[in-house]
Amino acid sequence: MQQHILHHNSKTITKNDRKVCLILKKPYKVLLVVRNLAIGGAERHVVNIVRNVNPALISLSVCILVNDVRQYLLPEIEQAGVPVFISPYYKNDPRVLGWLAEILRRENIDAAHSFLWRSDAVLALVSRLFGFQPIICTERGDRTLNVNRGRLFHIYDRLITFKQAVKICANSQLGA
Image (cartoon, helix red, strand yellow):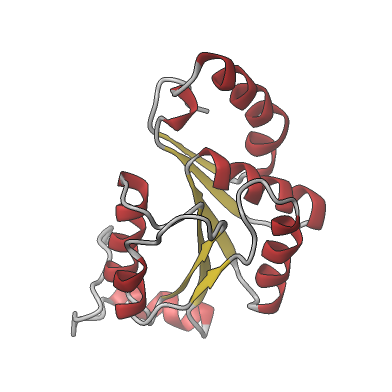
């Protein structure tokens, strides 16, 4: 079984890819959830995913949770032709929960994948409140930025995020 991701420009569809297409009968719809697209490691990772996933197999969309910062990497996402949903809300506005739930419902998203603690927390809470599954949460070390906040992150993760997510991708000492 091949484990690589096909690139947009690839002319080769493997035997396994054909099987996936036959089983799904349509691309699997995945929403990538980030707090913003300012310059950063996780944000750059989202851009790389968008550039490298085969759209015949996976239909990606990107959801930006806040609009209070400059979205430096947004043009790179738009250039790839991937739909982007930008929240009309600012940081810590609870209305973002209903807004995200509506996108998941309206766009018939099959799975959602969040990056970094705040987007993990929002997606997990939407999953809990509105019954959306499956979700994947990826943390990349931001839970260790502040000792006191780190404890709060840890408690929230144990009560909400880790219970809701079907997959946790941990890249720091806190881990899942």
